[in-house]
Image 1: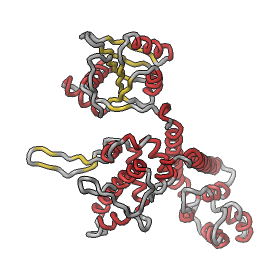
Image 2: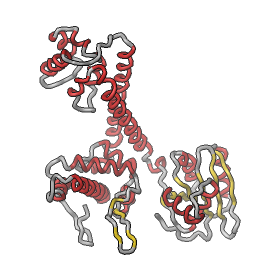
Image 3: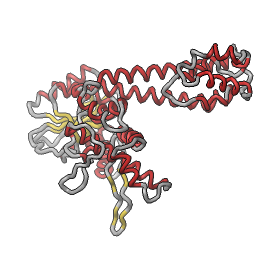
Image 4: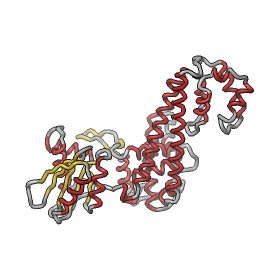
Length: 418
C-alpha cells in the first residue's frame, strides 16, 4: 500500500462501483459534511462527474474497489481527465468495514464511507490503467488463451467420461498430447470402432493414412488401432444416428478450440518477440511464450517493484504466520495476491525442475534429499521453487540480464537474491 502524504488541500472522492450505477462520496477540504451523489454507467454522467470535480480547483484523489471489469470504463475516463486514481483492497475494505461498524452489514453508501476513510488514513494502492500503460492487448490475449484452454480441458474431460466409454473405450490409450488435434480428427472420422472393422486392415490403413498426420511407425500405429477396434466393447451405434452426430459435433468444437489456441499463441509470439522483457523472461527454464505473456499481462512492468519481496507479496507468495501469545503456527504463503501469477510461477517451476543443469533443479534436489518419497516434503519443495521462480523473474527483468543457470547473487543481508 502507498501512504497518502497530505490530504488537507485535496478533494477525496470515494466511489462504490456496481454494474449500472456508482455511489460517489466527496470529501471537500474544510467541510465536515460530505457530498453524496449517484451516477449511472453512462458517458453523460461520467462527463458530469469530471466537470463537477474539476470545479473545486483543487487536487482530486479518487479511490475505488476493483469490481469485475465494471470499474475500468469509469476509471479510464477519470484518469484521462487528469485525476489521481487509487485502488482499495477488497480484503482491506471488508476488514475495515467490520471494524468501523462492528457488523458485516454491507451496502453501497456504507462502502463509499469506508473507502473514503481508507483514503484518509492512506490505506490505498496504485491503479495502473492497462489501456494507458500499453498492456491491454497482452492482457486480453492472455485471458482469452486461458478461457480457450479451460474450455478445451472441460470438453476433453467430457469426451473421456461420456463419449469414449460409450462408443470406443479402448481408444483413450492412443491419445498422448493435448497440443495436437490428430486424435480428435481421427475420432471425428471414425467415432465408432464398427466403422473401422467394416473395412479390411489394408483398406483402413490407406483410408486413415492422412488423418493421423505425421507419425513415426504410422503403419504400426494404424494396425494397432485396427486390432483394438476388432476387440472393442463399444456400443454398435449406427453411423447416421443422432448420437454419433452429437459426438462429432463435440469433436468439431474441440478441434476449433485447438485452432483458436494456436492462433492466440502465434499472435502472442508475434506481438512480444521484440519486447526486451519477453526475451529476458524466455531465457528462464520453464517459462515459454504463454507463461511469459501471462507474467507480463498480470504484473505489467516488473521494475515498478523496488524489491523482490514486493513482487512476492503481489503474487500472494509472501509468508504469513499465525501467532498469539506463546503459540506460533507454521509459516505459509499468504495467497492474498494475483492467483494467475501464482499458478503460472508454480507451473513454470514444475517444468524447470524437470530440466537439467539449472539452479531450480539443483535446489529441488537438495530440498528433497532427506526423503525423496515424502509427498509433503516434495510439495514444500515445489512451493520453494515457485518462490524462487518469482525472485528470478523479478531479478532478470529489473537488472536486464538473461538467466544464468547457477548464478546466485548475494544480498546485503547475506541471503541469495535468486
